[in-house]
Image (cartoon, rainbow, N blue to C red; front, top):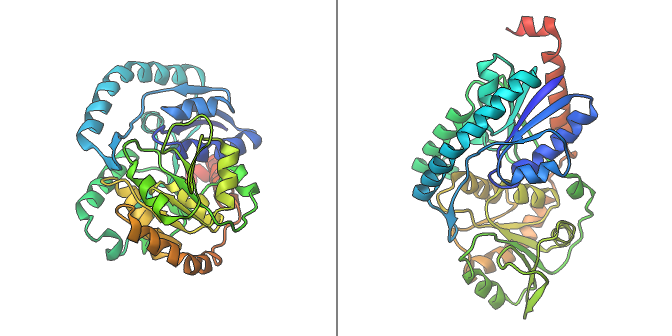
Length: 361
């Protein structure tokens, strides 16, 4: 089949997840054209041909808080500049590729193309859990307004898809129709990693102006291998703190051998920590409900702790809780990416069968 694939560029999780699905689709013999934005473009271009750059939504953060005003202004300004390029790419695809089905990882332009041309559209992402699931009161408590806002935005972004494949390590109370929950999509490097039990913490924090975190980590006396907090070209050692430049292989090695993980509420690192059975202390970006939801479910499942900020008591409580989290994580089961890729193959096969499509309509 000819598949148009859209990848939103906010954060690298969408790109890394899409890489796995794209690898599979190409191996299965499908023709794939990709529309992507942000950092996802360069990441995917290193691996695939046919990657088209378009403007995409992005979030402005400062001191671990999403700045709504700056986010709206930045997207409005850059969106006005990016729309002509998007329209040009849009029409090039009409003329040249003629897709038969669209898959969107939270990306709007490919979705609009599908709806305009009456093509089947499939959603593959983790964000839809906010809209497609019903969540217990304790997960929403104190965040009702951000929850309703996030749900409305997500619902409006990709409404009425033919099917939604939602990646998740937790389960909401109930689901809307045309929704399939699947385990997180993991990059091959994570699947190949062999978890061991070390004494260090893996720390990932990529928001500027969060240097106070270093003071808390230093006071703990625990060895911390830190990525993102400082921009360094080579490792810098400050007592028990090891500030490291980002290197994918080294990062995965430090993650696989960690005693625990300290990070934000992003889905990718959290799902990798869960898969490798590493307890995590999650400090979600304030105002970004998806991260808050992830962190609260992480704690609800017993896989780690959620905190509004990292201070001495929060870090100490997490360290004390690690043995109990280890026990809960030992029960977690995931058979690689087989469940999602198998379900996607089955759905594409049905879409490619004209009698089946006529019966479904």
